[in-house]
Image 1 (cartoon, one colour):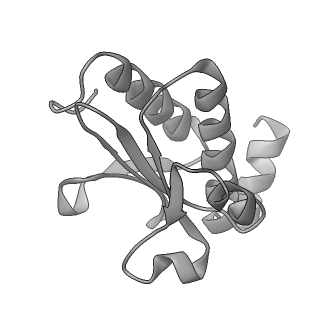
Image 2 (image 1 turned 90 degrees about the vertical axis):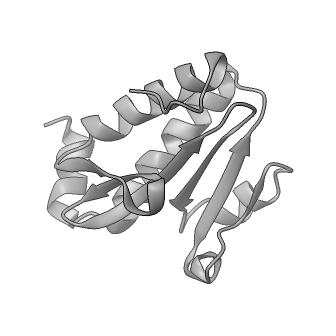
Image 3 (image 1 turned 60 degrees about the horizontal axis):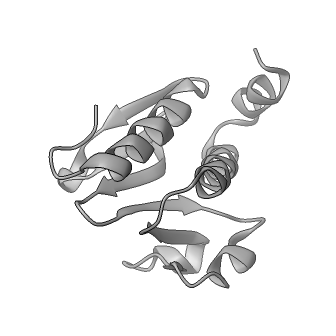
Amino acid sequence: MPSKKARGKFATLETALRAHALRLPESEEAFPWGERAIKVRGKSFLFMRAEEKELSFSVKLPQTGVQALALPFAEPTGYGLGRAGWVTVRVQRPSKAIEAQCRDWIDESYAAVAPKKLVRAMSDGS
């Protein structure tokens, strides 16, 4: 379900990324601080917020974080999380290519926080 503040293209992107994240093994949704969080076994791997003019989300990117931070729409996540490899992305112009990249980042973040057994299940398609 898209947030009430999201409209049009951002609501569509939010819905697609939410559905992708919730397909990952044992993922579940929570709403701390009024923001959508997707967790695996109690550990957050995605924070997401859709507004009228952008979709922002934060993910843990231990492998591709440096490359992601080179993009003009990415920055280290606040509250000290950036030092731990968290990156915040602000999408202002959704496209199929951006959506595909976001899915890859969500998968990497999941793999960074999920138990290895669940990561293997994700890789095996189980």
